[in-house]
Length: 516
Image 1 (cartoon, rainbow, N blue to C red):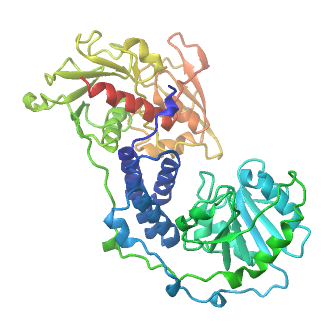
Image 2 (image 1 turned 135 degrees about the horizontal axis):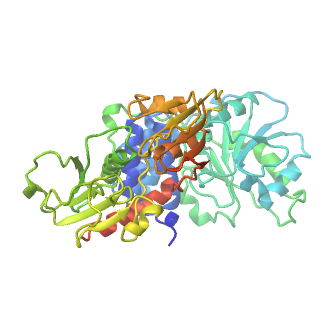
């Protein structure tokens, strides 16, 4: 099984999204939930849908929030918290279509939105080929690869910005071709950027969005027996079979007639109220039932990647739903309190100082290289390597915990200096004069270190195994190693796994260690 085939558990996704939302990254939390839900149909998905609804409500996107609540109730019909917030508009609650905004154009202005793959579908190509010959004005907004030549690429625009583009065109009708598919952008539709909004997908599904007035379908893609699943109106439009790219002469007149008469067919819905903060309760990730992790580490130092790895491992284990704490081996802890725990030591820790029965030895550097710690470990210890280079010292397990912040990136600014780092190497004085020296104390913060690296042309390092080299490359620097003989060569940094690959490593680590 490849590293990327193991998905996050529902506990992990809720924990990760909760951490993102708590840090103010609500959009990132929403994206995390949507990506997870696109790949998972676990029974616990109702919790992810509910939390997604809460996030949408906080952004005042009530249409998307209600859609998420309805999806939640489809997964768990008895979930009372969702039922209390879910609004089901009735015909009596709807206002006349005449109350909609009307631009009064002589010819309809129709905007089609969707992923490039949706526009490439044969029935869409046939339909558009015929409609372009009519009086209506058609605009296409698309995202993804290989978008149609006469479509505007809106892949780089936010949902709100795309909605503004639609309003600028004074669209009478908006037709969404992709919907809630993984490539879809229902957030655009949630802004209700046109007086009439239709969903027209190859495989129609209920949108749940208040903004969507109707689903357009034929008897083949949406049998009459399924209409009861839809809260939107269903507009029937049978289509003949024609060759791809051929103007659909039989369907086009009926589509034109449908679009011109749609205002008379569809009622409008009242706006959906936004719940108060006291009514919105976020579902928290439950703690897994398993042994606690105790991670033994020196006092925190931001300049030490190895120490950051140990502290960040504790955070990832907590997000995965397990109890995890960090303690130092310098303090006189009562060892009996760790009898049932899984204790994780770095390779430099002196033996089993906590007298733990379940020991994991985390190999963060070549054993003994730093001049302290053990070179040979206890026979019952599980050895885990930080990366593939250290794997020969371990039992086949690799856990490469990410520790680099997103502000380490290439700012494409002026590079007017070089820098040097000694680290665990030895200063031979072989680097060029005038280099700014990076030490454990300078720059004083991680963000200031990133700011410095973004202005450095070449980083010279005497340390052949340092995370600083990777971070420098992320910032766009050339990295040159000065070896023990004083010779210089480009430093090849280790492969850094993707976040999905790391999660796969973490799942495997948890699975193995919980069996100790």
